Image (cartoon, rainbow, N blue to C red):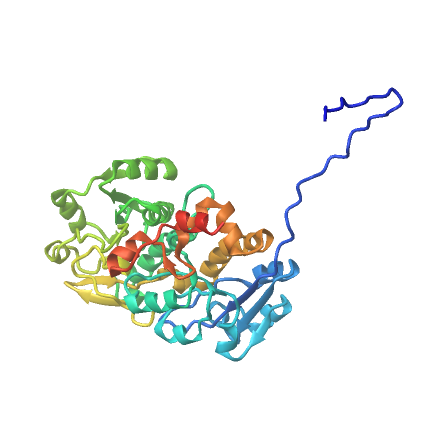
Length: 404
């Protein structure tokens, strides 16, 4: 059969079609559960009442355990007014498909976790155990950690905020323990006209170091920063906006500076494993009596040889006449500010998850979030954890692509 040519008549009128827009499928409702943290010294809560209000008005459901926000001074009343449901039974909260915690998952949480649940929480490597991970893997859980969560600019927003809080808090703590009220030396941190400024030494030029330096300079102290990364020292100087004494970590120079300082701050970070110890016991014994050491790196072992973990209730001990403040999780001592900072990161994330129709779609579209995921439907997708606990590692990108 010969193909007919299309017949065109002049009486036809051609009209353009209306433009059709590509409309995203309707989002889903996210059910979020926030338990009260029983972990040691955890005062933060991961969503503030204001953030809950935004989520609820976008059609999501939030369950909060009774008194979960109490330690950061957010009463139940604020949450229920924001539209959350207050629940008195812990296991009820754990039935929510999305669980948001401000402390890591503990042994006692495991029996209450649901199959295929999504958990957003910190991981504290020091308390993480292989059997915890294995049990979470059995329940096909997907888990996102605060520490590794990246935003679209490639930085870690929660870690950054917590480091900013810790850095700023360090100088407040130092000022407190230098005062006579706490058997300190009776020195005003910073100083006044006619009196040489207090000397502050900061080890580590990361975010904690930078914010500690800012606070110390604002009080009028003289600041010296040590770090082995010249790039970091340069960045700190640019960000602080003035020339300050910087040096690579050279034991002779460091020990000489420590002998004459009033405050020494340990703010070294290490990507994996323990912080290097760079201040020996001998260096500490040569420091002035009444000076203050604040070891922010204590979360990962500390960078002063004399450091031992202390608590918010008994924050200091004295060794060689030097006051040591080694409280892990400093931001928890400023729980309301810290909660607000975490909430600012998680609230938009949860909203996006709702708009995209669940976390799976969100991870598919937003590649930067993938670094924060250490479990995906029960598969371990964090290389550090798999190496450390000798568990099977699965590449998240392959896993997601294979499920599409």
